[in-house]
Image 1: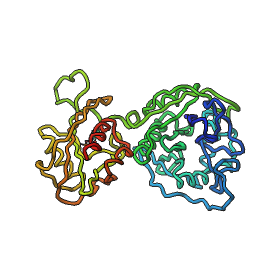
Image 2 (image 1 turned 90 degrees about the horizontal axis):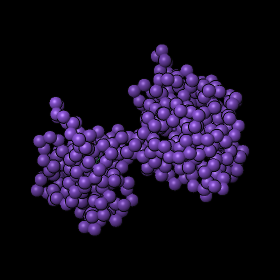
Image 3 (image 1 turned 180 degrees about the horizontal axis):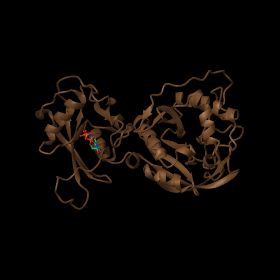
Image 4 (image 1 turned 90 degrees about the vertical axis):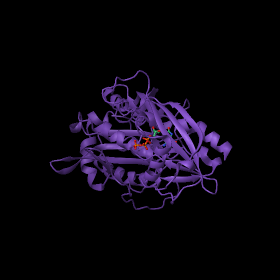
Length: 398
Ligand SMILES: Nc1nc2c([nH]c(=O)n2[C@H]2C[C@H](O)[C@@H](COP(=O)(O)OP(=O)(O)OP(=O)(O)O)O2)c(=O)[nH]1
């Protein structure tokens, strides 16, 4: 199973995995004084919800009663990912107190003390509430009853731009594709909901199964490192992996050729029509791509694919009604510029129109986040790579 990757910058004393960096910045040392947990990176004192003694974030003790945080469970075809509960402790202990599981995890001691399960579970709640780390139970169904299968976790880096992935699955559930199903779901959620661009992970060099899981969810190899494994009693060589939206959520599927047509060579060209809606305050509307779509979490100009037989203007008028509930006439869509960008699986050709007049009030029909953004602020929003030149031109024009 994967261990958390060791990629914090060297000036950070404590890295997200609960390990510290030595002088060369690429080797993790065991954390002083902290109690390890069953996934790779507990960073908050169990029981109290306060930082561990000795951690730079330590403050004078203030008792905090931990409680299960608000987090809508994430579902996959077979699994539910939800915050751990106190009642999970006995099952969690049974599953992780297994040498075959523990030996693959950086911060799990072996044998694993039973009371550690209780205290560690409580410590994960504060991290979710603080939006620092999401350690979730992987839950399946067996004979009609809920059963704990393992854990999956993402921990945000200090700068908030990346997150570390970790997971483990109880031995009796191996061989059923649980790890990639759970890890991919959590990564997709994080890329859509958090302002992170990169997911990182590591796997022991002698753990090809976990390396295969990381590759399967789209992470690519990113070098080698050394990490201390409590269960193994010392430093172990690990392979590092990382990936962003394009790798993990996959680019948009290329448009399918008409039935019976031979597949043409090269990448298919995808025609997408988009518009910069500009309000009377000269602000531009951006919409956040929702979870489940390629490039989820990035901000874009409203629009969508041009369907066969449609003009770009007709496509835009349809999309604006479907997505924002506004009526626009073709005469109000002024051609502005276009994007021509090669994604991995297709080439995007996207005319961008400018529109200052429409009927109705903009509302997010599909539940997508919307933002009216001043031209000078556009650069602060993470947008698809194809949009970068468009943003610069808009800023100059508006
Ligand atoms: N609308 C829009 N799409 C963009 C922008 N930049 C960019 O790279 N794209 C890409 C992302 C997608 O690969 C593609 C748009 O496809 P889409 O899947 O969102 O189109 P759609 O709204 O028709 O979606 P669907 O009904 O097929 O789910 O264009 C942009 O600024 N606006």
